[in-house]
Length: 305
Image (cartoon, rainbow, N blue to C red):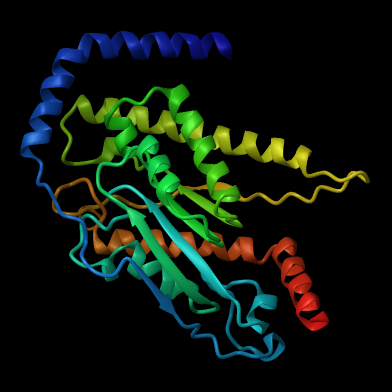
């Protein structure tokens, strides 16, 4: 398998070198011809009161949905803090208002079970290195949930794979330590070979790089989980670690209606699907025994006071 991987790598770089002059010309053409869309306007932080009125889960008639958050948490009034972090897609490029983007569509879904305080830290053109700088400047605080959009600019800026892996590891570590995040979702780099604004063979080349960065991101997060599992195993061999970071593979059909008019960024419909899938995965996490135990512990501490 290693030999096959080496052959594939050599083939990829050989083709890349041959096509390099054409790829450069196409890159310049795309830069000048593609519509430059602004970031969505609107609030970048806010609060959604929980719309869940159930006080007894045993009598609740609602079925499990994409935003079904841990039943035990329904009994307390804790507010979940959400951070949306990243590049132009996180910043809402492709739609006019933030209410149409992730920041406007994800919090209301989560608020079906929890009160949500949310914050958006995102800007167009940010690479993974830039996002690390943004986090460094952000004051230390607690975020329960974090959704990260990163990678497209690393593809177009040809970030080295070793640097990408280091940056993803650094981001995951910062979010779970400095910001004490319980759950972090790294949205997968979109399939750039389907971006209609890109001509061939540039589209193929960037799509291949995007898939490689996705695979490497998944590998890094699994390695971090395994390392943390060892570090968080007690003297009796009980693993107290939970999988805090994971890749959110956004499943979009990439039909014209899912793309903004620039052929690269999400439309309102795409943001809606993205938000729904993120809410589903956050909901699965909140249904874990770890979160139930955490709430139970908090409840006991509250009673002791």
